[in-house]
Length: 398
Image 1 (cartoon, helix red, strand yellow):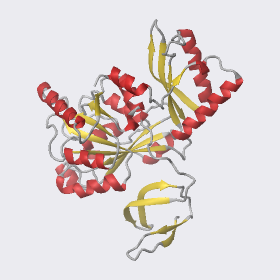
Image 2: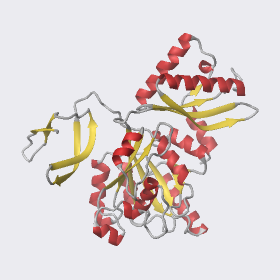
Image 3: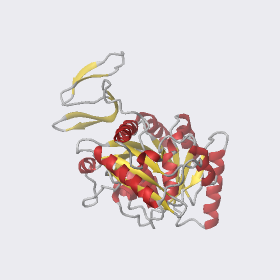
Image 4: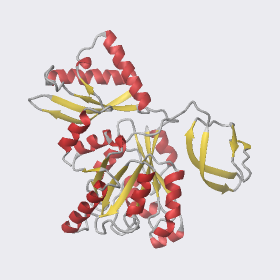
């Protein structure tokens, strides 16, 4: 579908970002206080970040913003961000003789002990390049075409030997308040503690298995890890084969917003790539999916799709290469703009969902999982269960 038609479609129902008009032009003290309160409310809804769209009125009652008025609006927005200890970063600008407009990301500066987490499940058929893409995104080094990037994510010896993921793997990508990536590998490995300390937003990738014999593991990862979004991987040279449709159906049944990444475009002939995209868009438009696919070609497409992605109607499609690095910057920008779908529920009683257990010598049993609500502190007493008879056992966190 044409992006111009889509923008007109979402213009009336657009809630985030909203159009900013007169209030930003030299507001009075009362108007400025209202703008501060509005920013606070938007931060509460967006977990510490929001996107503003500064533009002139389009209904004929007010002229489009001139360059001088536009600069005044931008200065007002930056001063509002400063009152909340936040950074204001321009995402895109359109400066013409007819008027000026722009999208701005306003994100709070988080301290070392706090950050916003976005969970993205990575699914797709075997050999679609899931682990390779995550290795390239998180470590910042391109693949050599033989799978060196994916070796940094594998957990078991047989995964390294076969090149196929058989377990639920995790990796993270951190962004600071200005949208810069904070991942800095040291001797080929990432220090997750430093990434979380320096990041304001952390994207957690849930790397799931693509082979059909590991489907139960994939279902467990999609349900137990509570992903906010799903990234469906499709190999440009192979097309929609194997478990692709099953993974798509699983995502749709769980009502998780999905975006598609077509990989290996550097090795796929143009006619094969064109046919893969045609079949992909046909599948997404089918009555079973009812999605509106959008081919992401530039940064403007990224901003538009990211701000309207939570409607579960749009389905952005990225075409990337892990070897040449083509369009990887667009995918990184899109991940930076994603916002959490689930509210934090920080003030509710703590609820922690256990995904895996470990036995550490000298420490004992260690569990990992997802904090669904509440806040867990040192020496808190929690209830572990239910056991086979439905009972909960008190335990201490230390």
